[in-house]
Image 1: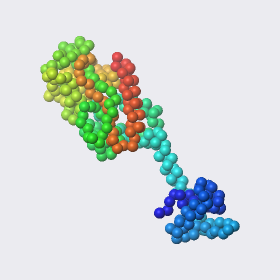
Image 2: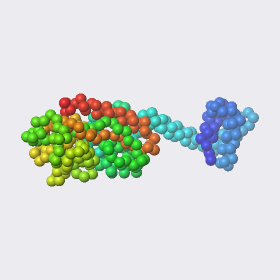
Image 3: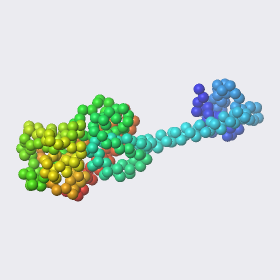
Image 4: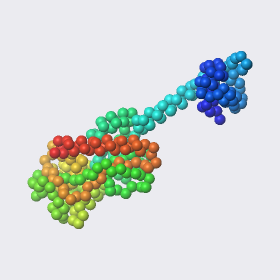
Length: 305
């Protein structure tokens, strides 16, 4: 098989017209260069140069092949430089999947940070429920996920917890709990919550956020988004638990409802997940640092006050 080393020898000989100078250019001995070119000629069944004791003259086919060799070597150099740039700046395209109760509230604040940290990287965002996201990651359609734990994950996936995300109790302003700055487990015992429809992990997380009390779903309605839940609470149709992340991002701004702190609830854990076999894990950790910074920034926003 013709090697890149032989192509370099051929291009150098054509450039210099001299075996000695060509060898110096390739940083090899003259005998090494001569042997490499002889092996190339034997493989191709042609003569690339006419040799005499006084001079070297490239044959017509040798000049043509040397020109092609230079083009191939330039492409190889571009190939290697591209890989080096990606290694330095991160993968050039990353496909990030996020669940609907995290992505819309965290990513708008995170994207400016990500662009500064990884200026050569393009992000494609996909919003789906947890199970389709996990399937997309395993099948290679996605590179990393932004999801909430606890959730069972396949052994091929590694997850790094970014932050814990507690809850606020959203009630109509005239609700019996609407004048409370905080509520606890006893206040919610035997109450029903408006929740997201099945398939959203937040539904399960909200119901299981307290142990030892009877907290159930209001079966009369299930929502497809947190914004719908906020609107239903505002219309005095029930109460719900909203993640602090969504509240800090301003989901309740402009709505007439009361938000109370929830004491003693088990928070969900927002995490970044990727395939253990991915070559971009160090880049993913940089992304995780940006997401943590974005969450901290949201906690200092006016909506979080």
